[in-house]
Every structure is written in structure tokens, then in C-alpha cells.
Length: 112
Length: 197
Image (cartoon, rainbow over all chains, first blue to last red; front, side):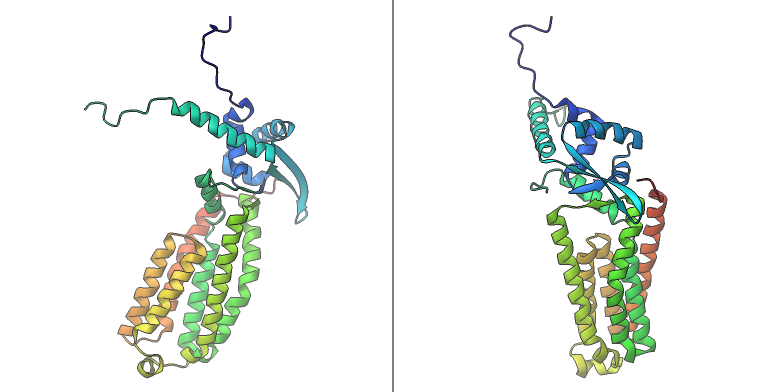
């Protein structure tokens, strides 16, 4: 049984972005125009394997684009967030914000 | 392109990481020290030293970018951020240009000439303060406020003690160079070179 009929509607949250590692990747790409693989490993502190697997999912969802180029005769993989990905981050931010806004803020001085 | 000030802190953190190498500080410190030393020893060549600094800016920026990208990776910031950078580089260019224009007449001055040559003694200290403020704008770092204070105090001390005006630049430049070296060491430890794509 999934729940009672009068349960409040469950807020829609983009699960693809909700995953912490992907959220960190998307947030870091959101604030810049483009970045390469090395930059993401440095700034997110994720392992290369982690970034690769999460990037594959984000790319499949059309949230990021991947471009493989060469710089100084060395391969370089550049990632860019797409318009769809940017919109998804903005929507996620609003949804989570709305959800958290329903939680009562902690009292400043509970002993008072 | 980011068109909203959202996640501003994250962008500033990323920008800070790519500018924590200390190379700009080292360059500024070395330039000030060089200009100061030439001012003391070969005042006639002051404008030449300033020109040397000016033509070194472009190669320094290119080499610095390669150095940082090999460690932190490549990143292209948003257009507002790049516009701000361009403004800063333009301001720095104007500053050096202005300094080149006044370098030669200033270089031939002796401390006792200042009264009749450029007016109030404090003018030199104010000139150094102006350079310091422009530099803090150039590198966008809070630590530059300390540099500004050092330049201003050393400039004022030089006026007060009638010391040759190259000394405050040399001392301040050496201090800024040392800070840049310390930052560079920390940066290399934090971001070892990587050749992975």
C-alpha cells in the first residue's frame, strides 16, 4: 500500500540532481561557463571514476554536454551545463527551498 | 551564462582557488622591488625598468595560466566575471602607463628636491597609496589591504626621513614577493601537477 488517499502530495524533486555527488557537480558547473575534468576533480573532491559515472547519467539526461579537445598536445575533456540542466538546478533549488521553508526554524534560545 | 547571483559563494570559492597560486603577488612584488632598486642605483633607467615590467605582464599571464591549469584544471568563468577581470587588467595597464610617464622626472629627483619639484612631501606617500589601492583592486584580495598599508607607511617614512624614494618600493616589493612565494608553496602542495585528461 503506497499511502492513504488523504496524504499530502509528495513534493516533486529531481532525483537525478538530488544525489549528492551529482548535485555537487551540477552546482560547480552552474557557476561557470565551462570546466574540464581536472577542475571538477579538484573542486568537487570526487574521484575520477565517480565523476565519469555521474557525468554519463547527467549527459544522458541532457543536463551537461561533453567536448573532447586537445590543449598543448594533451587530451582535455570539457563539460558545460545545458540550458535544460540550468533550468533543472533552478527548479531543484526552488523545490528544496520550498520544502525546507515548511520546517520550523530552531529556537534561538531554547532554555529561555 | 549565469544570469543570477545564485550560488555566488561557490563561484567565489572556485575563482579563489584558481587565483591562490601567489604568482600575481610575486610578479607585483618583484616589479616593485625591481623599480625600487633601479630608482636607488640607476635612477636614469627608471622608465626602462617600468617598461620592462609592462612588457612582462602578457608573458607572465600566459605562463601563469598554463601553470595553474596543469594543477587546478581549466575553467572558463562567466561573462560578468570575465568583464570584471578585463576592467582590472585595463586599470592595471593605465596605472603602469601613468607610472612610466612620471618615472623619468621622478627618477632624477633627490629627496631635497621634492619641496620645489612636486609640492608637499606627502605627495610621494599618496602616490604609493594610490598604487597600493590600484593593486588591491587588481588582485581582488583582502591581503592587498595589508600591502596597501605597508606601501603607504613605507612611503610616508621615506618622506619623513628624506630617504631615496626607491627604498619603500624595494622593501614593500620584497615583502609582497615573500608572501607570493609562501602562497605558491602552499598552492603546489595543495594542487600537485596532474597530467590526466
